[in-house]
Image (cartoon, rainbow, N blue to C red):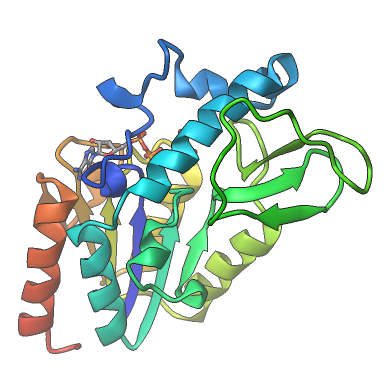
Length: 241
Ligand code: APR
């Protein structure tokens, strides 16, 4: 069985991480879609860092939920497997998914990188300083920023290449898209191309999305409930596993 799974913020919702576009997504009455931009960082880097520091702390305190664990189980039984996640949290990794089986297409929240040069570091284990000063790059003195992809920014070409290489090798028997509004064209494009002519495309989301019309099966339930059941069902019934 060749599998592609695509996840978004909804998969971490049951771990207590607010989604971007949901009711709880606002932070201090600010819209994340306006904070997660190069313009917001240029105007008020301190405010944007405060938001990210809070998110980091929330993620450190969170635990992977049954949806993350179900994806690890599926990966363990598949002949070939790739997860493309839009989530910048580390919950897929902490659930036990190997780094080489996943692509964090929007980056990782625990990476801090220079706004100008390639200097970067990871700080998963470090406590945040609430009112920490803004850090500058030790190599070029530019502001350090969170290593995530903001609205209007390019995706990392090496990451695109990993996804494209996986898609190019063969089509997938199974594509699962869970917990994403699928607002980005590349997400829809990858899901549709991956399933090819014959693959299954299963959407797990309580609400409809632009991808719903193309799905071979819709599961309108929270991912933490639906995914463990779906994975067990697939493992028990599919002759491809
Ligand atoms: N289980 C499954 N899906 C859920 C759950 C749940 N428990 N709770 C909410 N959802 C669904 C919502 O119906 C919605 O479709 O998850 C989706 C969350 O959507 P967004 O907040 O838009 O998150 P996402 O699709 O990951 O956003 C994509 O946009 O903001 C940027 O870069 C950011 O990676 C993010 C990207």
